Image (cartoon, rainbow, N blue to C red; front, side):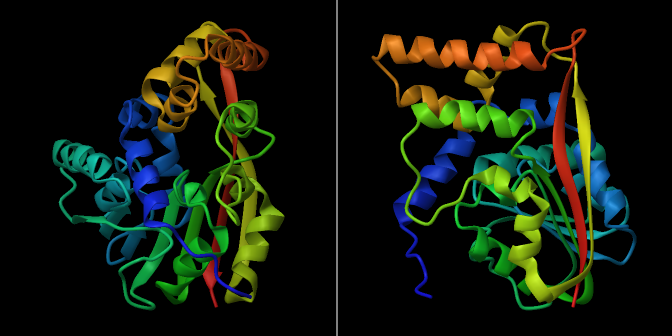
Length: 272
């Protein structure tokens, strides 16, 4: 099979997208607990050499370092890593290195890590097979892999479905991020390179919004992909209003008694 060529411009656009808005607020205010979830699922502790792929602002890398591991937090967007460094300093997490890196072309040696993990991060690399191959490559035989990914049918998966008609088409060969939340898809990506695959759907409770419009406005201000969707509609008032309505309606449909439930897939495996 011929490999899909990766445009440097595509990587540059992804880097810029995740630097827009204020992703730190999303990670810190809405989903901070997911980092601890993956640290516990991977049984990370003293002596472990850990790679956090697409680490963002470090909501998994920091607790992994606090658990005693030697952690490398990698991400395509330097601005997020800068915020992560500040978080680590505030938390007293010292055994942490921050590295700009592409999840589809990691600058690390084969079998360099005891654990490779990603919390709603690697799922946004556009070419899933490449990212999965790199994920597996850097883990030693017997090492652990841990992934937290939004599911297609859960709230964030449905948010991307709602935004899709308003966004430019993805590059040829790219796959939708929420497919990493489909257990069968991830099993197919990892194949026989792993054993002891364990997968469980869980939810995180979000009580930050009283209305769907509040959710929409928060994401319009803070979340890179949503900001990009609106930028693509600049000057088109009718389409902008349609996207406004679609996202507010989605939020209202998922709100129950002032809270939302966002579904994710927690998957762990052992490197063969």
